[in-house]
Length: 100
Image (cartoon, rainbow, N blue to C red; front, side, top):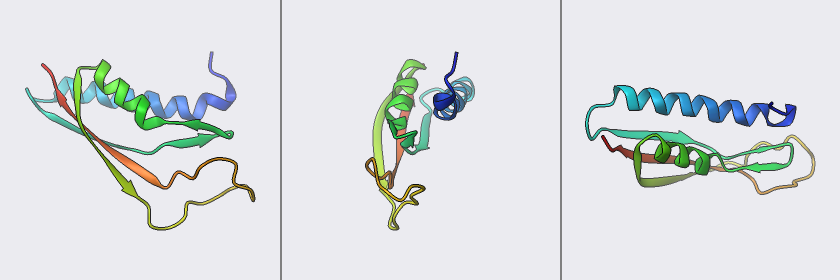
């Protein structure tokens, strides 16, 4: 059963999993998947989404061949007045080749 604090991040990962499965279903032989994602902080807990999605890609038959890091030029928005964790001001492009 999902805890209330984890429902948001787990839902996002489930969406990525469904998307990766659909790509695996329709992708042509030796096709390439490029997946954009960003890490999150949820209830002061680090959620390294790019690692979870990379693992999903491998589990669903993709060989991860590259990773691009994009740096945000402006400061990320802070909801609390005090910074409790590292800022998430980068996103990732994960590139995987489907092994059929």
